[in-house]
Length: 115
Image (cartoon, rainbow, N blue to C red; front, side, top):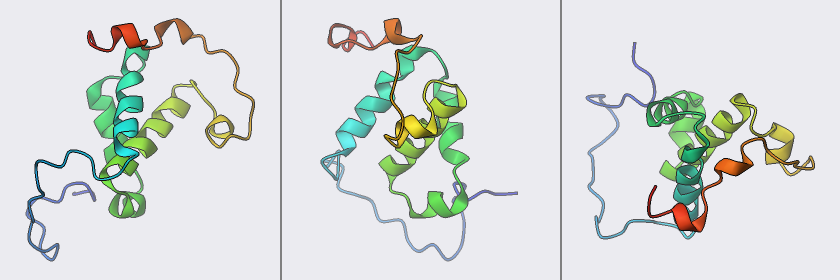
């Protein structure tokens, strides 16, 4: 059984058109999306395989319409909620955020190069 993310060899999707590799980010918010995703790694709540799995488990409709970094953000939001780090209301700005028990694991500027 294949899922929507398993696109290898599917017919009808058209030709693969390589992108200009000199362009790293296609929108102003893409670097921030990557930074936020990387910054959550030191929380120690999931690994890279779990992160990829979260992207692959997005609803097929969402997976098909989301851009690359929209997939990253949706999967990250799901992981944060599943692990009890934030609530859906907090993500929506509808709840007051409180201190996190993982606050001491925050990725500080001084640790960025190390990570």
